[in-house]
Image 1 (cartoon, helix red, strand yellow):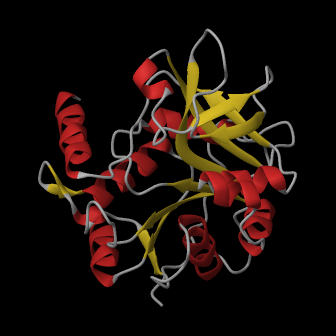
Image 2 (cartoon, rainbow, N blue to C red):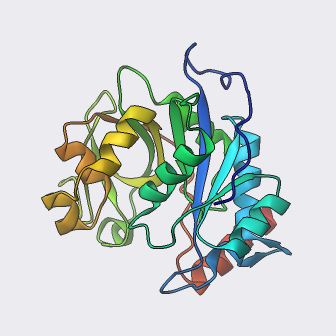
Length: 256
């Protein structure tokens, strides 16, 4: 297992004193619709390099890529990230993040973990920082949502909707068209900021009934009684899961 030594850094701007975060980017080559996704070319650079750039600009702590394969490790190192090789057979990105964190920081210096997915190259660095700031008021996990009034998105089961209380607490996540009635839906943005102890409890627990039914990992946390808090952002950074998604990401990034 390859790993770089943990960096000694100050807490990111805006975080509470005593909170120290690290950004972990899980990445693996296996993808049913876009094999080799971390190395997919975007304007002459692999996707993983774009994700490292986003994490660096967010200034949310040192950057660790949880790589499942050596070719991903090599690309991430070239982009300037710390890297830990993880078991390619781990069941989820959260398990990959936790395994990499334990190898990178066994002494437990970092108590906040930003799980920045490796396939969201249109994510804005400021929104990563906003997700970190949402970990407040005793929340175990923080994330982001983005509003939409598009009926096609409302009824798309591949687009996950978050149901929030007025104070930002997440009550449920679903693939169904929800909530009922007039008004926007809130699309879930796939970034998670964990308190480290919450991440440890989460990966130690078995998949929950609602998680298995909706195929949404975050429902396990809610069924465990954890508090997930979400803040809203305007732009929705769609993940890259297919060749058309990759083309769309290239177009967005060319425009920036």
